[in-house]
Amino acid sequence: MVHTLRVHLLSCLTMKILRPYIDIFFPAVCACCGSALRSSNHHLCLWCKKKRFERAESEGFQILPDSVQFQFAMWSFDKGGYLQDLLHDLKYNCLRSVGEELGRTLAGSFLRVSKSEMGNLFEQSPPVIVPVPLHKSKLRKRGYNQAEALARGFSEISGWTVAATNAVVRVKKTTTQTGLTAEKRAENLKNAFRLNKPKAVAGKIPIIIDDVFTTGATTFELAKVLKECTEPAVIATVAKA
Image (tube, rainbow, N blue to C red):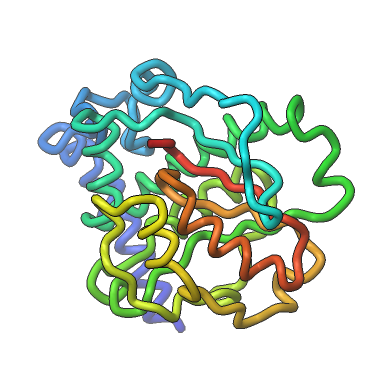
């Protein structure tokens, strides 16, 4: 115990000494556009978070399955642009801190919209945050789940609890969704998830978190599985393609 505390104190002291030099030789830059950041505690510049991307427009009347009561996306996906590159890096380069910051940004946007569009929905039933799970083989390959990082940041701002790890699991190793039609995507995701810990979500409103909403095949299938013991889900994503 004493040894562990000593190592921790030395580590903290070393970082305090080295921090000015680290900031000089390795200045903090925006993970999206590469612009210099004023604080090394952030990973995205204010311009990228507030002005670079188009807000995803509500499509008015939207056909959703019975297992989903509301779908929200923060930004419109920009194929070949900054956002696509950022979300690709988030998914494959283990940018956990960037994911958490995006999750906090997503939560702020979501809460502003939810007050006007969903009223007192979360007063009727408590919410629980459910990141879209990865299959264990993909989790081993990538090292982490980007949806879980988003969910952690989302939880910090909303104050809502993230569902217990493995409350719902991905049991089917699906092929990539890229290039598939909506029908093929749905077939690819059929029976992909299993509710593993019903008590962790029972009677609550799941807030399903993911990076991109395309046809909804993934989140709709997850919502269908959760509906066995929950209220209809709400979907919140960083982008909508």
